[in-house]
Length: 171
Image (cartoon, rainbow, N blue to C red; front, side, top):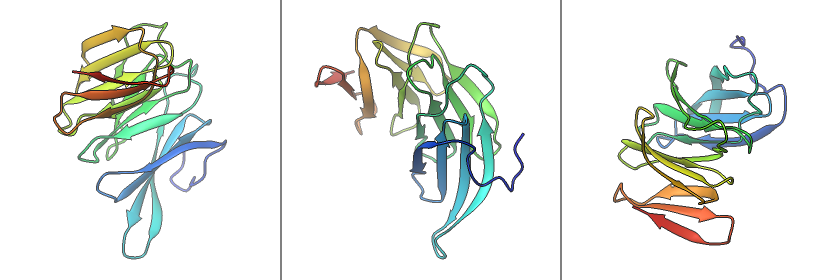
């Protein structure tokens, strides 16, 4: 477990993003940690809150993550060889669940629906899943090499950018 005074990562930082409410900043990278900072919009200062550590030692780092719309959860992906998405409760630091379907998957991108009830994830090996907010796979497609995902405001349609320079729509 990391000490609360450990503000910096031990390795390269690969990704960072503010929460939708603008009051938290998360950063992650090669050291397999996601650091959460509280942000004070008046002083523009960051204060270290906690570190979310990976439980899987084979994991290759933190390459991407997405905040839930209410800023309470973080869905975390690794680089190409990662076959799981970890969903954390940011306030408690607890791992709530993992999204995992096959050990052959590459789940490198993730998005929350605007209402927070669904999560979409995918990767460049051709996996694409839509799950409920507890991680249960509701729908999956194979052969869609996903680079990035985004839900539309209707909470049903998902846009996926693929490796063939196309945008795909899934409902």
